[in-house]
Figure 1 (tube, rainbow, N blue to C red):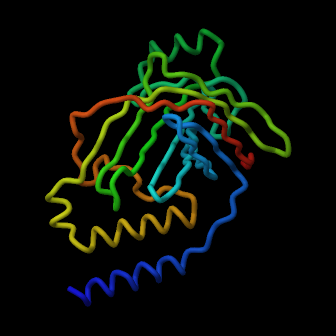
Figure 2 (figure 1 turned 135 degrees about the vertical axis):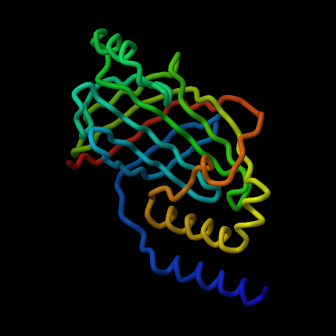
Figure 3 (figure 1 turned 180 degrees about the vertical axis):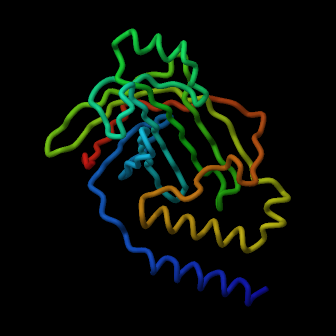
Length: 221
């Protein structure tokens, strides 16, 4: 057992040394249930959808925004975005939003926070369709885009399954530690999400409030 623990620690240190901190001039600041969350987000493109991933460690936190525009552009467009839920795909509802002429597109928001380390329990929040809020994206100075937002997320709680803890053993623990190092070094999330990864949702439900949120992204095609 001591040999296995030593190997785990050595591997963890080696991974930490191998990853250099990636420079990032982006910024995000928001109050989450009255507590400040401040970090440097990243923008990622996936086809005609782009999203922002804003992450931190100790404890692990991940705030993500997915954007889709009516024009199917894979680059951010200045304007107002309606926050919707993850099941938003109804053509009738989509067309009614387009016809309003108020929005450039829609956005989906998800927040994940580690509540028991190492990644044993999580608090997860997902945006809602009705009264979900809005995100306003404007041009800022020096080639930046700025987004302002406030919203209320539907909150749920997750706990690691006993079977996952027992069967995963030191290998699962090592993976968790390596994921933490990767997130800390790069700014990208590495499996900061319990869904589909050996966790069970509890019956506890609540709300997560995001207020006075602002992100600034260096615009690059």
